[in-house]
Image 1: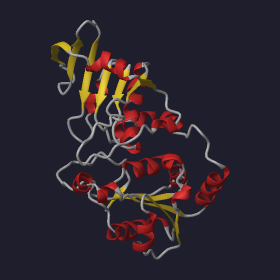
Image 2: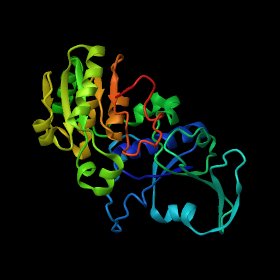
Image 3: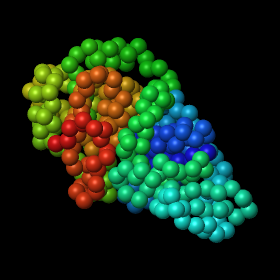
Length: 304
C-alpha cells in the first residue's frame, strides 16, 4: 500500500493524492489516506485547520483509521535498517513486532524530486508534492478520479455550459488566511490588483478580448478593488457549493486562467479542458524568493 499523509486544504490534498495514485497505479497496489494530522485539532499558534476534502471526488483510496496508521507507521520502531542506496533521501524502518518494511518518504525540498518515483509499494509519503511532474503519466486516470462524486445541480451545469461557450477567463483571488493569519501572510504573501493587471496584460494578446469570471474567498474585496477593462462577472458564494466544489466546476469550465499563488486555482486550471487554454500565474509563489518553484507549473504556463 502507498500511504499518504494528508495536510492542508483541498488543493494540497489533491497534490498529495495525485502522487500516491501514480505510485499505486504503477505498483498495482492501493492508496491509503492518513487523516491523523489533518483532523487533529490540538491548538496550534497561527495554524489554519482544514477538513478532509477528497470525499468530494471519485478518488480511489482507502481512508485508514488512526489506530491502523499508528500500527503501520507511527508505532515505535525497533531499529533503523539502512539508508536506501537507490533513494538516499529516504529512510527504511522496521516496526517492532512486525516483519514488514516500510519506506518513510519525507519531502526534502519544494521542487520535483525524481527519486521519490522509485519508492516501493510499501511507502508512507509525508510532504506536499506540488508538481505536475509527479503525476503527468496518469493524467487521464487522475482526471477521472477528480470528477465530483455528486453531480452538480442543473443551475451549476447551466452556468458551466455558458462559461465554456465564451472566450472566458477564470480570474481567481485568494485572500482570507493569506491576509488574516500572520504565519500564512508572512510565508505566502498575497497577489494585489497590480498583479492581476500584469497577468491580463500578458494574457489578452494571446487570446483576444476576454469575458472574465471572478471567483474568490473574498468576493466583496474583488468588487471593490478589481477594476477590469473587460466584461466581468463576480461569482458570489451562492455559486460556491459544498466546500467550494461548485466553484471548482465553474472555474475548470473556463477557457483560460489567471491564478494567484493558490493550489486550488492550480487544480482548476490543470483540469480545464479547452484545447488552447492559456494559464497565467505569479512568478513569486512564496514571499521567500529563494524557494525554487520551477516545477510547480506544467510547461507552457506563463508566469508574471
